[in-house]
Image (cartoon, rainbow over all chains, first blue to last red; front, side, top):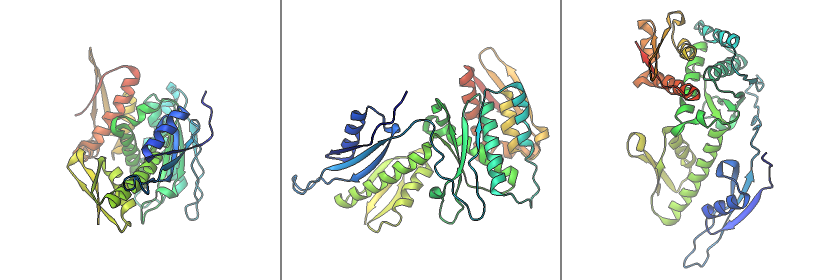
Length: 269
Length: 75
């Protein structure tokens, strides 16, 4: 059984070193902690003016992750919907068949957020059951993930044991789940709704670490007056980097390379 | 797993009643043949096969859980 430990502050030459030392001390992997960079650290000139980096590692409790936050979108309140998924029985399988049948919606039908949430959770729930996966879907509206000028997305977080299989190589399975759920919801409501399918808050955590990486690398680019090329990432991950650095007056960002090999480059101005 | 294919396909097409899935058991793998009305062909395949590929990915996950090999064909 995993026991939550206290958070730990580590000081070392670089942020990376500090994180590694801290993880070694805690005996945890990077996925099991939240990382907060307290001081970026500086290499200095010939060791003069050098400053150590400091990070705080906060072990996270593994199960169950709390529903992040339930935000009230304008007038409606969306309750987190929790649907436990049992091993599918014959009756269940028949039952879930009714869900896609709802997909005949009239063009001008208006759907409340509650209906959309309800349908999304039921559909994803049924999909996982059909795939033979035991998990729980928790829905919440996440204000923090809202894109500019768009409604905050409905996040469907899948929690359970051993769900690595749902993320897949390069995120492929997770993306497929999200794509099918979005299509089903679009079909049902006849309109587009921002929906994110997540596993154990993987996307939320990944986003957070990308944002942190972007800021760190921008500082490094500015300090060294050299462009920095990040590793290849899928489009939505590159986008996170671009968005974070959009308002930074000292750098510009650009994606280079083609197809699966596109990399964000951070260029000091 | 036949039900999984139907579950996904029916949610994507305009005419769920015409969704037919045939399960063909081979010696080493199982083939799922999915057919829809001609009008829904585009929806089931998607731009550059995105929908079909997403369905294949999820089907593969289910197959791995059962230790099977599967292919999805759209006919």
